[in-house]
Length: 123
View (tube, one colour):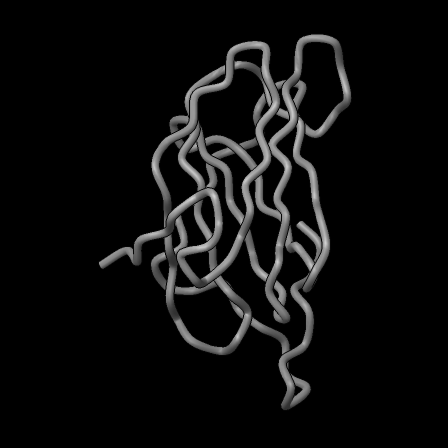
């Protein structure tokens, strides 16, 4: 995974304590292939967000820059998606599981209720 961006104080952000463990990548993931589906993260906030995609402990993490879009390519399956806004707080959020079967999905990331993928904070 690429290094996380520096915080306003110049120190590097760390993954939050409740970030889900990663036990390996998904076979064929992050490759544009005929049999892979796109999960597109549309970050409509003014701060970067760390996203994690998991399927039985396997998956990947990526940083989505402010007001930008990032795509991950994954095989068909059921995925849990995790979010951590890089604002210095140790908060991890998740939404409902998504199931991909030969279709792509775009998740609009907003802290307000206006996004298409409501988040809830992990306890």
